Amino acid sequence: MTYEFKVDTVWKGPLLETVFVFSGKDTSSCANMRFDIRRDYIVYEGNGLIVSRTGLLASAHEDLTELGEGQRPVSGTSEPRPISID
Image 1 (cartoon, helix red, strand yellow):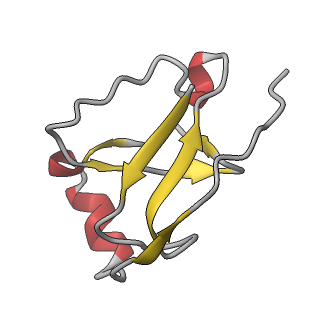
Image 2 (cartoon, rainbow, N blue to C red; image 1 turned 135 degrees about the vertical axis):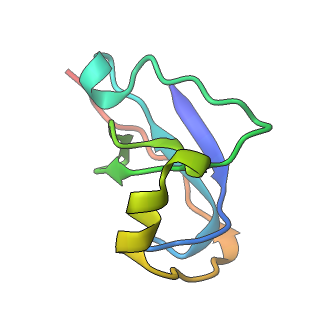
């Protein structure tokens, strides 16, 4: 599955306001992750895939303390890129 996110804050990775990330086929890569468009999330990704630490921003107090302030994204969109998942 491909997810498109509007980004408010960036800590690592591309500093773009819109990014695409993917889920894998198994639960370890968050294949069963469901997002509510009315909620804010902290999204972790590795190699273009959503990883298990991803969750609601409101529950990410420890993560936000560790990550610090972050940066505002710049105008732009990452391109969805096809990936091969075995």
